[in-house]
Image (cartoon, rainbow, N blue to C red; front, side, top):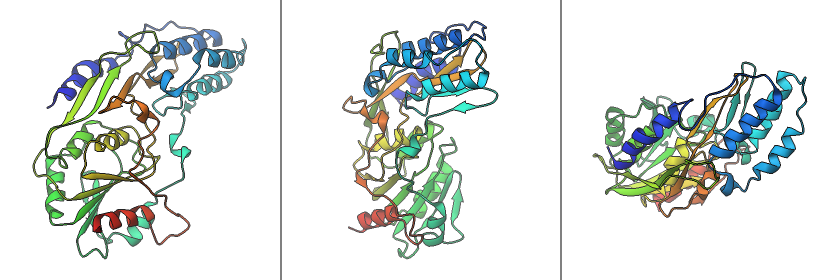
Amino acid sequence: MMKSIKYMLAVFIPFLMACEGYLFEEDLSSLDPQVNFDYLWKQCDEKYAYFDLKEIDWDEKYTEYSSKLYPEMSDDSLFNVLGGLLRELKDDHTNLSSTFNVAFYGTQNLGPDNFDWRIVTDHYLPSDYYISGPFVHDFLLNSNQEIGYIRFSQFTGMINSTNLNFILNRYKHTKGLIIDLRENGGGAVSDVFALLERFINQKTLVYYSRLKNGKAHTAFSEDQPTFISPVSPIYNQKVMMLIDRGTYSAGSFTALSTKAMPSITLIGDTTGGGLGLPNGGQLPNGWTYRFSITQTLDANLNNEYESGVPPDIRVITNLSDRTKDEVIERAKLEINK
């Protein structure tokens, strides 16, 4: 489709699918806590992509967490030590999984809750709203059919020309669209391009990607550009995209891409990040892990958005008022300007 997609399919995906290949060595069986700790620490040390950006002293973390180990510790205790070590990466693409627990970070908790679907359905949408593939949508109540609202809650890989063509045709005479990505935890990156290519009029560079390819924390492949090209029909009116800390991974890729798309305005709170694609493997004791092995940079080659893509207009919803969504209200105001 485009140079960047071909690159991702040809280069990144085989790496991300492989547990025993170029990036991850063949695992050796052992139940020893120190062996498992050392194995996990080393894998992260050589292959995690964001140490420098996040200013993490990984040697210091080795000293801190290895001191918690002892020979006869239980699986639960060892899991808590290893899971705590991985949480120091502050990355929800980083997990440790066993048969009895999963360790995660929780970037959505870094900011206030900024979305309640019940408020939207009670006060902004008709009761018989439309469901087209992964989209819930309709004209906003009391907007004289001049503003369309589209809720996109998950990147399921189900965006296609049928559901998008129907939606864009339905709202083609509106003043503007609201696309609500709040609490969208991500999913299929292909949906990012399928969605955004309908809101752009020329081929546009939206970001770069690079792969961790050496043991040093600064060892990366060359930066690979990602372009989005328009696909008809194009919607040329104002687009307000709503984001929050729960907008993660593919949601952050979408938000980052809009920084190069002047027709789209981001409203809400900073996203949760998740711009590094994850891969993982298996510890000697059989537990599995993953963490980010790529970096995504904006069109100016800045990688700072891994910590979250900021909105163009910051608005926080007062959830104690069950009659109003301040983020939607601001989106309406911007469309009607």
